[in-house]
Length: 444
Ligand SMILES: [Zn+2]
Image 1: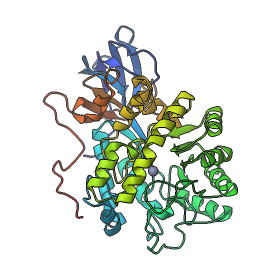
Image 2 (image 1 turned 180 degrees about the vertical axis):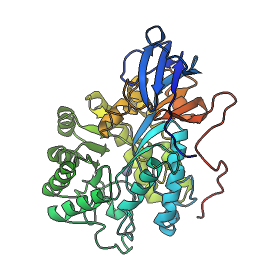
Image 3 (image 1 turned 30 degrees about the vertical axis):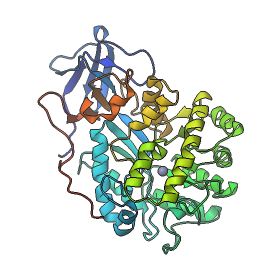
Image 4 (image 1 turned 90 degrees about the horizontal axis):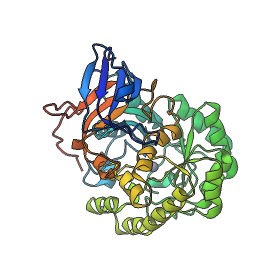
């Protein structure tokens, strides 16, 4: 399917409108889409329906912004494709993983996600790892394949022996330049990633949980190194995110002027106060350590010590999520989907947020308005306001009553990206973006 610029006017009539701004839903709404953008939106009695417009009946449906996953890794060997993710990662070329990532992006669009911010895949043997995710974004933007709006980090910016470096086995050789040490070498790395066309910089300030080889409370760089990375990203007008498991890493990140803090598995009162005061965005990525993720990893060959580590970290993730939410820190929905959980089930993250104290409306905002702000796209998407791109979904059921509805793609009956109806599951329709409905299975 080649993307085209829709000329006509479409009107979504009669749906319950949740516009992403957090106000009361509008019971009987009208949304006017002209070309790629929202022309008018509001109560049916107050919005004029242009003559000759194509009318789409949305009565008994919810109309809301397309969802945003602000943190996932499209290029990793997801369990949906590879029986053994460790073998899948080692034995698969980056080029093949890139093609799988296209399918993953399309699955996400079919699940109601119109924007994804894809984080890197560490490739110790690939000196130009930053090219891959950027190529996928450009292919979708060029209309070669239908897919969600994509922001790509390209490659990681990280020091030797950091969490990212240790995602690969210690024994694998590293190509020179896949990590860097010292402020100037890291500045050069940022510039190299941005030269490839990355949309944001992703770095790492603490140890992590993905492997059994490292402790989460290891400091991963000095203050002057993180200062250099953030300064360099901002010099090129790009945002910077950092993996921050610990209170120390969160404080260092805020001091450096970071834009988004990822994970927050551990924290303390001082770090929470600082993040709240400075208005930082936090991406909790709870799905990655949920019961579902643990089960999936066990079923796909993860060693017992990795499983034990995930189990140990989960209560800290959940408890500290409650603390950061209660402190009023801005939460942008992100799942860290990579080797697991299964791609397309990402709205499970919202169920966890509600389980831990968010209202359903707050959870929806975390995946729409707040996520768009965190990734610097709030001027163009994230809410249904006139002038923004018509990125929206129509849902058969009310996620304010049961947030789990958003995990059921059969209930997401329409998906619009930039005014184009790319997925249509309304009665008698079966239009989608996946070219091959029957997937024949991964190699390992
Ligand atoms: Zn991640």
